[in-house]
Amino acid sequence: MENPWKPACIALAALLVLSVLLGISGAYSGIANPSFYSSTVSKEAIAQKAVDFISANYLNAGVTAGLVNVTETNGVYKTVIRYSSSDGDQIAYVYLTRDGSLLFPSAYPLTARAGGAVKKTAEESCAALTRQDDAALEVFVVSYCPYGTQMQGVLADVVAGVPDLAEHITVRYIGQITNGTVQSMHGSTEAAENLRQICIREEQPEAYWKYVACFINSTSSSACLATAGVDTDRLGTCLSDLARGIRYAQDDFSRADGYSATGSPTLVLNGARVSEFDFGGRNPEAVKTLLCCGFLTQPGSCATRLSNVTTGRSQGGC
Image 1 (spheres, rainbow, N blue to C red):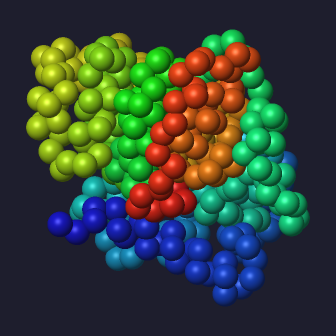
Image 2 (image 1 turned 180 degrees about the vertical axis):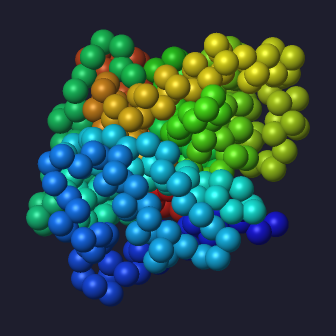
């Protein structure tokens, strides 16, 4: 089956190629006449100009773009765009300078490695973390991102190998809610799966990791529901009840926005963004070590050694 979000991905890829050709590091000027912009122009008007610019220059035939919302974060406008075609919808994010003159298809936080700094050792990274009695690792993903599912698989291995760390790990999901419907960056199928996993996590937590471990290696969610022993009647009620499933999802999305977590996966330990690559990579031992470094006093189970082998894609995100 053809990728239902391919047209929008191609459009965004075209933007990335353009940045390389022009040597402007992902910034796109000329969105509109500079005289349009002033301090009195709303962020919504500026964001709409960006949507019009993308529509006029980068979309394939049969693909349309619409503005979902725009918020100011870290001094720029984070703009949520819905791309629509006969294959379905895709939600994507772009960023704009406040004067509306530059558009960025992605935003990357600067770290201590910028400017050629020497990479920290795992021990140095551990020492630099904020610690608390009850460490909490939040991992933001979307369910059809290969990098996100790779991280979910790693987390499932951590929970299987060190079960008492499960209560310190929460997988959350990235998305938007529009007109009472969950939206996700890879379309409606992913949005439905995100909500399904959220409902299982919230109301049948004993089945969550069993379901995830099955789902990341299967194309059949219904088979995995049976394998994990999920009560499908209870799940169906959660999915259809706006006071339950949608409310849980909105909490995830609000937390993702609070951390500017737009890439899958994004890791947050004790309220601060962290990287598994500071601890050895995207593998069970590295992620376990990262989480254990967040405790003031590490549980004895943190001494358990897990696999340090990274399988599949070693780095990246959606």
